Length: 216
Ligand code: B16
Ligand code: MG
Image 1 (cartoon, rainbow, N blue to C red):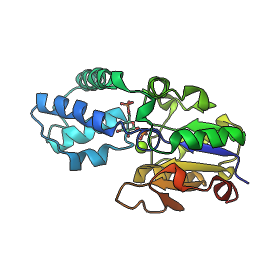
Image 2: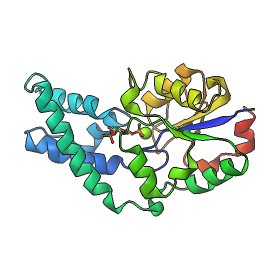
Image 3: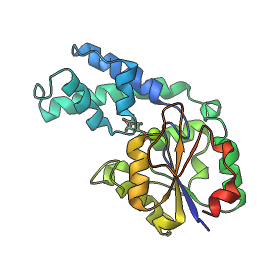
């Protein structure tokens, strides 16, 4: 029997990718780099600094900024992004999330957030589900980002279970790779592109039978 659920945030609990895109596009435009929605796909699940590095590489400006200047650019993007999150409400939970979290609570299965986002506590509060999670892994404590398994291993540790007893939920390929590298059962939440290596793929969490999932 599985004993815990480990959730990615963006793309699984809510869809903040559209706000990341608006904020990154504004930042990129301001330094003469053009990005589009297709490029934005590459930024899913990737940390703030790694996202900036990918944008600078795309504009062939990887060596144009000092570390301090890059930090200022990332902060500028984040300020804009957090402003865009101001209107987030529980209605922005992805379909089936509320019901799934309630089912987990009824079965006393702890839920943990394993997100690259440093804004996760703020976002969960705005969505009204902060109390549904036993722990949020602090991405600032990580040595490596996804696809490294570290964040998922830390999430399992936080609720004192072995990774093999956890189910991980992800929408990004880097995340599914991290879940599998941690030795967990992987649920891929897909829009249209398949996720390689996921043990099961669903479009929304209510497509899952929680009892079947726990028996994996
Ligand atoms: P922040 P996830 C990730 O969230 C996003 O998918 C990614 O686009 C973003 O750059 C990253 O969080 C960092 O977010 O700038 O808020 O710290 O999918 O890991 O929940
Ligand atoms: Mg995600």
